[in-house]
Structures are given as C-alpha cells and as structure tokens.
Image 1 (cartoon, one colour):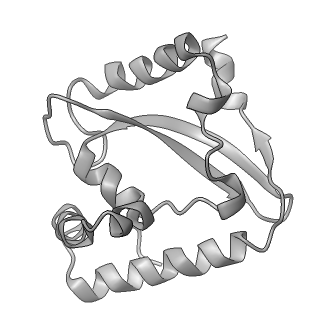
Image 2 (cartoon, rainbow, N blue to C red):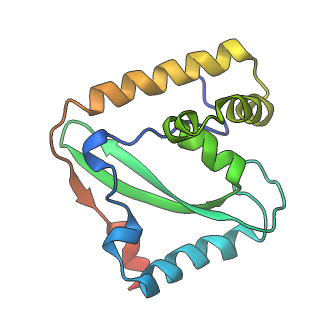
Amino acid sequence: MVSMKLNFELVPDSCWHSNLRSILTPYQWDVVRKEAYSRAGGKCMICGAAVKRLEAHERWGYDEKNAVQKLVDVVAVCRSCHEVIHIGRTQLIGRENEACEHFMKVNGCNYSEYRKALGEANVAHRRRNLIPEWKLDLTYLKKFI
C-alpha cells in the first residue's frame, strides 16, 4: 500500500459511537481538542489549508492480534479532510464526489488510486469487524492528566 498524506480511517463497527466526547467530560474534551488546535496554528494538520474552523479528529491504531484499539493522536483538520477520513458517513450524506476530489488533490493522485485506497481501507475494515470486542488503550491522554 502506497503511503498517502490523507487516508481513510474506517473505525470497526463495534467501536462506533465510542469516541472521546462520549468518554471524557466536556471540560476534558475541550482541553484535548484545544491542544490539537494550538499545535495546528490555524491550519489543517493534513492538507495545510488555513481555515477559520478546525475540527478535532481522533487517530486510532489497531492491534488486531491483541484486539486493542489505541488512541494515537488527536489532530486538527479542515472539514474537507475530515469528510475524506470518515468517507462512510460522507457517502451517506451525498458528498463523496467532493471528498474524492479533495483526496486526489491532497495526495496528488488520480481516480484509480482513490478507488484502490478506498478498497484497501474497506478490506482492513472488514477484517477488523471480525473482532467482536476491542480493548481500549487511552495512554495518549496521560499527558493531559
């Protein structure tokens, strides 16, 4: 798999709706997301676009052998990058064409490479869905405590 600047991050179905906003208090979430905004300096941490409103995105790593979903980072991204990252939701709201264009622009690739990357992300998603329950590793948050 070729490394891209902007990637799809498909969360296993059993992990849907369990994000930091549902685990942390509103105050704790504000501390975490504002730290990401501060690191970003007003620019998307993926495509570099200067935008008025950044969105906090949780980056997760998956240890499939041990069934561990690990919080790796919280990054500040523009809406367009966030729509690519969460392509499944984006497809449901009818914005896949815009996301496809943004993916190709940021990664300097063509439609065929977009479809290949999406296919690979879907293969990983299906494989991770075979794991019925993931253990959560939130050691990333220790720097905020």
